[in-house]
Image (cartoon, rainbow, N blue to C red; front, side, top):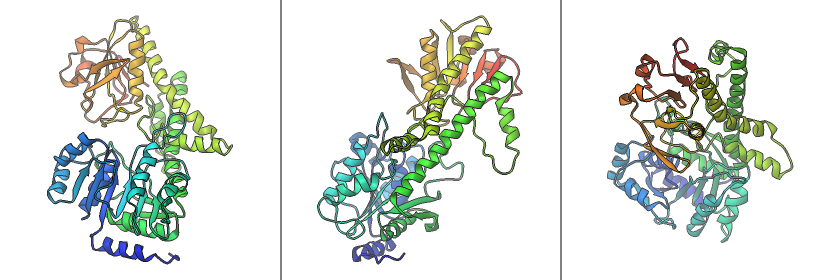
Length: 444
């Protein structure tokens, strides 16, 4: 660090070391609540701000809506007086450090209304020495072009009067820490508006992680913003590649799973990706589009991202066509047939249907005249074409009631033994069943 820290920053770092500063997190969703818990568990009094009053009430009663945060953890932090959810437009109490963890949906263009609203809420209470760390995914330049001007509108300056940085969220909502990675031990990137901002923000972020060395400083917020989009663009493109090759392998009569397993024996230069109905959630389908949008804005191009996004979108229809062909070969068709779809989330073991391509497959099946039901232990009901469908308990479902099982998203402990024994045709789009299984099972 070559910049001299402002006096207010020195005071903030002293409060950080003594655990006397107050942490605030705006947005208590899939990234905000785990971060708030990490801060509270690290010894800081933490306030979570969210406009959803009902949600805040449940959190204050110790009821978690996020699988990554156990109710027992929440209750412990509530009992210790280190976490409070606040339903308010204004940040009261005013924190010393505030993280912005609000949604950044993408339609035809980026929707930064939540970011602007959160930044304005901070601007209304901004004081010298405050540390502001944005986490919401967006295009490179959002922190300095959108957030910084709002914060500086009343005269305080980033890098001199307060600290401003960007640190992209990194969380795997499906693992619940079972893969060894949690919000507290996952490496994090941080980029400040100035070098001193980076240093202060890195110290703050490091204090809520297991090891401050997990924080990787970069030159600017734009670098950190771009890095997040690279991570998800990498996945988008490689998933699209394996989906494209899956179609080709099927046409050639080759098992793509056997091909992937064979290629995976190479100890270097290869990472396995697997085919499916298409990636969902807020990250892979949306985040790379921020890069594509930014490229278009400066008269550049991202053809690989554009093609990959379109290819992945097409997989739901391809899975539908494969199912239709499978039933047609058996002389059954889909009209009037009862189809049980396994999995409704955007990925295995998540109670989240945002951009779920499994739902799109269900819609296509229903549109072809099939009577669609679904089984997902984490999702109670879904709406297809305006009609609500309630989840079926797979363990007690009668195989005789169904003409087809379509495995769209496979969670842990999937057991289709009764359906296999009953000879119910199964289309496995998630490669959840062993390839050695014989009978009426067909895999993507």
